[in-house]
Length: 273
Image 1 (tube, rainbow, N blue to C red):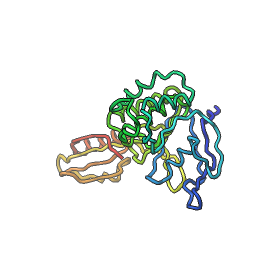
Image 2 (image 1 turned 60 degrees about the vertical axis):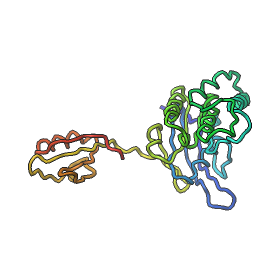
Image 3 (image 1 turned 30 degrees about the horizontal axis):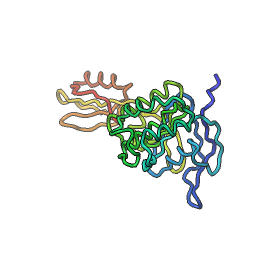
Image 4 (image 1 turned 90 degrees about the vertical axis):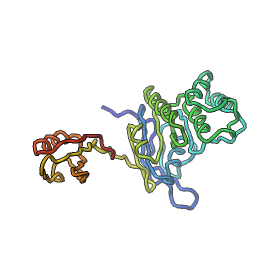
């Protein structure tokens, strides 16, 4: 079966500002339709530069870019210092993007829990509320490719959940999402594909196998070499017993071995990695 044509593809793309060191070096990266792609990287690693190139607001220094999907883009620094109100700003951008029906603006702002009146000037909004307006302008036009730069930064807990819903809804209608974050747990929670951007290059991040934490207590003088057991990655002494970090696929075998060897199982729990 022929793989689907990607919405956008970067081939050998690099970016350098002036005569400084390159920010991005020979990036090969593509986004397929209906996927959520998370890009993980430390602050200053070039994540924002990569997203600006994907969004078409910055030119690559070299390389090829194919595909021109309709883009909704939330930059890392949303321009919140304007005299326009949130409502007027969204109406203005919607008209520029060719959106005739503006009835979705107020419900979207309400869903994002914008604090205060939508008629308040953008320059009076807090960072979190300006971020909500930025999200609204990105998703309002129902783009083919939604590009979000650190979108969870500065948002309250309730809006974290709403943003996750908006990302899932975008994917469900066949569009794609690319977002960045520096926290592995955030990227892993929302992305179908995870990439790491480091030293100017991007590479897929292989998922870790699911693991379990098993806490055992000896019934008598039980002694076992748990580190030699298949699937056991770590053994730690704790309160007279041991705590094992085990691949989920080997957990049942380890538990059977423990019970038959005179150990009591105190706890079996998911293991964060």
